[in-house]
Amino acid sequence: MNIVKYRPRSSWQTLDNLPEEINRLFDFSVGGLFPVSQKVASLALDVWDDKENIYVEADLPGIDEKDIKLNVKGDVLSISGKKEESKEEKKKGYFHCERFQGSFFREVVLNSAVDTAKVKAKYKKGVLSVTLPKKEKEDEKAISIDVE
Image (cartoon, rainbow, N blue to C red):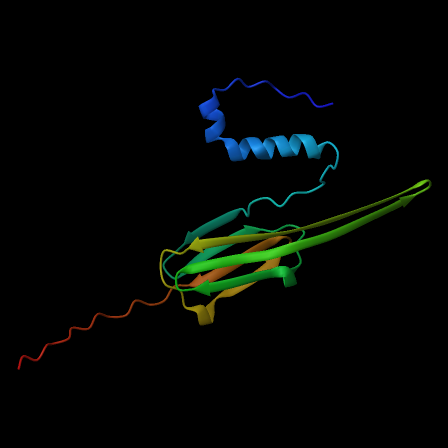
């Protein structure tokens, strides 16, 4: 039996937090019956830049390189993927099998346009590193208007 701390709230506070309350209730009622070994957490990112590049690092432990997709469109970087895992355990007198699958998606709005032909990405020890070269700013061109 789980011990749950009593949190007195007014009816209006409960309505404001209805989605969180439903999730908490679901986790409490089902979580004890069917414990989940892992949950897909939000994608942790580090983003920084210098004069030439924008750098993005994402923590993706346990995910295969083939299951990660990157897309750059305009000034938006999209990182998405999925994780599927299956565990079996056989011991004398019982058999245990669990399956887990989940997906993630994250978009990052970049602070400048990117040269998509030169984007580089590498994945090592569960960390995705993306280098996005900034596009050189085009010179402004003055256009004269002919008056007829």
